[in-house]
Image 1: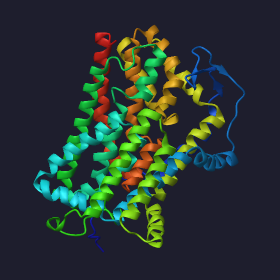
Image 2 (image 1 turned 180 degrees about the vertical axis):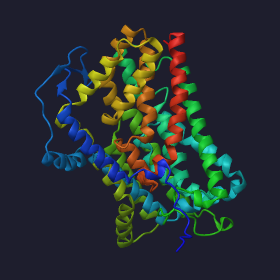
Image 3 (image 1 turned 60 degrees about the vertical axis):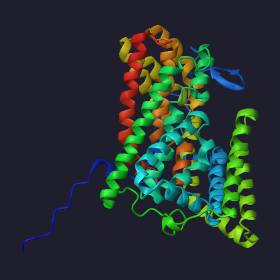
Image 4 (image 1 turned 135 degrees about the vertical axis):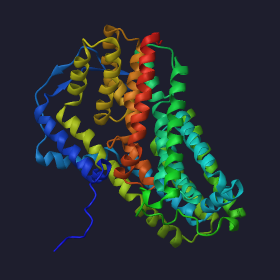
Length: 469
């Protein structure tokens, strides 16, 4: 009997990307195995401005501390313990947005805005919002902007887009803006302190690179938007939960009530308080979480919610962001395993050793690639700077690279790969706020990473040729 069924199409590479839990567990197992293969080692460190900084040339091998099976699974709850601040800000941000969503203030504000600007200008709106979110990443920071992500989700759906587009507008733009920021205090600032350079010097070249990176993100967002408008089956968001994020009525019916205006005003005042605290009192994540909860409570009072309604919606909001909060803790397990096995310094030391003897231009690119690898194991920008730049800066001088060029290579390796770094808690947290799984995000953003890396490496070669200083 002849088989008339159509042959199944071969899966494309990005369709084979496993679930985020699978990816992270695979990395956890891989790092555990590495603790048996890589010698344990450590650099001596000194306290500088309250933080531990590596002393160049002080690396030494120590007794191996391989991680056994029990310790590997023990590292998971320890990872949650280490990431508790980021986990809670995800919950607090979810609660705040959930209460605001329940009041209908966000929906009415977005509906009114889109109605007044017109859906015909939706591509322009996507471009503008990509740059707005990018500017937030440049000037304000990373996790500090977590509360802004759900707004992009509502806006994207109102324009006819999807949750992946929302992540591109917000998470993608903020990650690029923060990662390539000419005034990033965690990467560039820390690097300039270590190198003894004028703080944020050489900003023009980095500013141009950052602008080009955001332009690529804006172009890619519009390109994806046009693709899903012409064919909804090409959307990477199929099956994702949009409950509470979609507009519930035609655009013409939207308007803002006094109550809605007060809720939005409360949110904006809260953001103003956060920015004031961050820049004047060095507020960290816990202070931000506290302000988010205060905003939620005030918005609930303005919306005249009963205690029972408020309480029920708090738990409903938590249920939406709980998977993302879980992923943050799960990803932090990798950092804990590195510390248990004492292999982080060994990896940094050996990568630096491999760079010696390379030609000038190749050494600059290789240094950036090395930082891409290290970023997987040390996702904190300032932590990576303190762990690697004291080693890389003297090495760069030996190779013939200026300190400014070495810092640029570090910033590119750290900042661009943050777009797909499964161990970066902030990325996982922000994706959870717009309900986008990591595996689908990687399918969407991977071409952008490639394009920006190529452009960034061209800039790095330019920096070498002009003796960037």
